[in-house]
Image (cartoon, rainbow, N blue to C red; front, side):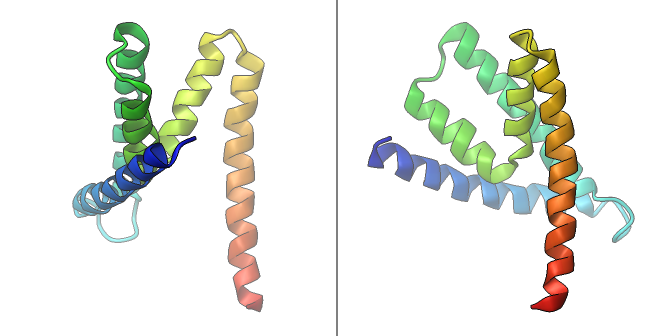
Length: 127
């Protein structure tokens, strides 16, 4: 990994984080406060759509060079939502015929993520 790519990923991450704040906040206004995380759902679905489109363009049309792919898919979409990376990696496993690994990824990401969030939340009581 070179410094130039790292800087572009960081710049993309800043853009993605700002977009997440804007888009998520906009979408959440359509749901009464606390009733459903529509902002997060919107960001995650849009991120998955975007990473699928970019990944397809990169794979089928060679439309992105490695630097552009890093900036957009790791930087911008990584800042926007890491759920998109999870979805794209799981899709890749399934497309490669590794259905057991794809399923394990879904189960492990969900269960371990929720468990870690719960443990972190509970640990905060003691800090």
